[in-house]
Image (cartoon, rainbow over all chains, first blue to last red; front, top):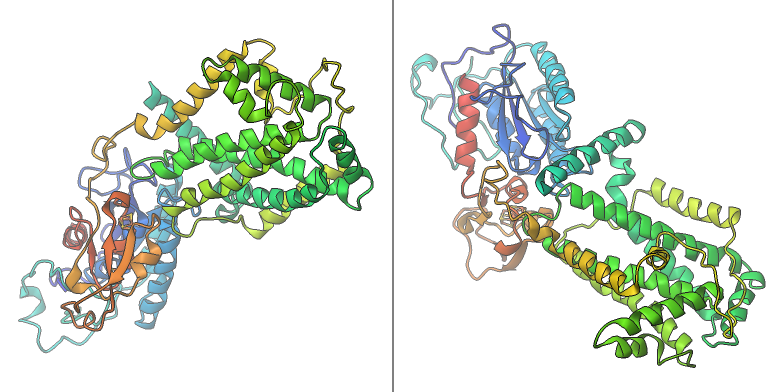
Length: 182
Length: 385
Ligand code: SF4
Ligand code: SF4
């Protein structure tokens, strides 16, 4: 799994926690909410990634984000029951629940993973919810994943490890091979 | 113009949703269950209709009396007749809500035109069934309806006479009339289920029932209405005299009210235009994804080497666009060695929603222009910034 080995343990405290959000194309309209680089106008610590439906999100991507330095991740779909694609938001709601339970067993605070449901014109409510989520995450200590012993196979000291680029075939929600501790 | 109107209607619909959502939690919002409510009312209609059918006699001298007997003398007859009548109104109301909601929220887009088309057919049939139902009672309203319909049908150029014959069994009031009307009430009701099958084929896990609370509420409301405003017949039809007034049920009989102002031919033409336009709605805005300002991610593709035949995508695709077929050979990855099935995408049904991608735990599905690799890159650059 690719990583950002030279990243500080947590960006919390610098300018708020680093948050990655997956936003469905049919849910909250992103015009006026995001800057060109994908960060939210009101919350520069939150980056939104547009996806065709909230149900498109693989739970493994949420875990991937947490393992690579995000302090919190969330998915936003339409209000439950009103998914443009009928069930996408219900499905991702369930999957997020499962992921939370699974990561909780690995000592990750489940509150770091969120599922939000806001309709196209509910932009203000959405921003408030993201802010609340971000504040909650900001109050959590340390990085998302508890520190691990450096894996013996890892190449070199953490600060010098080059990023190998996304290894596309990885990401199966399994053991975080070679995660450099903090 | 139409586009701007549609955008406004979408905003209005969503605003109504938010208002309703203040009262009910999202998963109990009745507006999300208009289809399920329609099916509920239809089921009630069929069950109560069977009861009414057992007592109804389709002949001139006995139709009215059999309905009166059923209403006044048969235990619970009055209630069941009322339930049949008010469920029909309820059915029409939720069907119209269903239509407008799905129209304004643009749920006819991409490959979702088939539910829309079958829905228009269902609506047309529903109107027809409602009118024939009012005719069966054979009171003065029924007679007026038959006369007006026969008159209108006869005016249609070329096929008018034939149409009238087909509907009513000949000119004037023939003995065939009521048996034929009975069939024209029940036959299309069976037809509803044929179109419903079509309505559902491209939909996985259709919401056929509303939540229990709404089922109870809808049934209770219908029964309450039955008790408060009992359904009665008007005076029996007297063939020698034309009835002068027509009690209008606005949900089904509005065209007959309009006949006071417009010649029947204009009304028929209007109906044809309306239905024709309804069928055209899904094709009116042939916008591609990029024209809508969305990313065109492409139809989902199975990476055959990884597919284990676990069927998860098949259960989760909301549009029934994935079929499982027997797999002649194992896949390449370890997990895919023992597979008996593999997933195949029916591309014409795929709306590129990507839900199957989220469903597949074996990374065997991708949207070609929004790969897992792309998402990983986006996540990494987001974490880096
Ligand atoms: S992207 Fe997948 S889930 Fe969505 S319609 Fe296509 S096959 Fe079905
Ligand atoms: S979910 Fe993935 S592995 Fe399972 S059948 Fe579908 S494509 Fe194959």
